[in-house]
Amino acid sequence: MRKLAAGNWKMNGLAADLAEIEAIAAGAPEGCEVLICPPATLLARAAAFGLAVGGQDCHAKGAGAHTGDLSAAMLADAGAEYVIVGHSERRADHGETSEEVAAKAQAAQGAGLTAIVCVGETEAERDAGRTLDVVGAQIAASVAGLDPARLVVAYEPVWAIGTGRTPTLEEIAEVHGFLRARVDVPLLYGGSVKPGNAAEIFAVPDVNGALVGGASLKSADFLAIAKALAAA
Ligand code: 13P
Image (cartoon, rainbow, N blue to C red):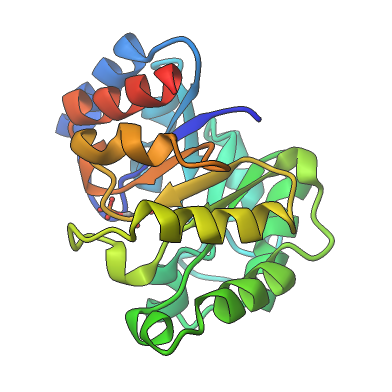
């Protein structure tokens, strides 16, 4: 399975931060693909450094009266090869359903992009023993009808995002094995991936890379994670 180190900059990054993306492009290891998803305002300038770039969301429609939204074709036009859809922050902040996520992913693939579809349980769902039910329902509804050749799935437990907490390696293995039985595409783990825990996470079966938030903002940290993936 191909390996992908993906950085999600979320709502972070001004022109002054392009130097970090330039350094990531310059230091990217052989042996895995390296992707940065900056804010859309930096997409075209980031793409000029020659590494893969992606959007963080797209609209399901191709064009029209949707003030403030971006179509997949616009992202591709700005140099994107990927787009994240269904991130838990979009599901929570904007009420996106898995059906909407599937429509966005369809639009992304229609514009030639690879869709990174995110799934993951909340802490309450994990505590209630419902992790596989929740992730199973999300994956079934979110990837319906998609082309596996242009699809990546990211497992991001909501409670691990930005908290410094991660599931045990056994818990990651359980969910990734469950996802692998449903989709034959690269599977990323996301949620508090750091240089210090990357290698052990990449050694887990069916983990083909990472979707990294905070640690992707600094080139040294993100490159350390990418190198751990390349070596895995
Ligand atoms: P952190 O790496 O900051 O926990 O964020 C993970 C994430 O949400 C990536 O999409």
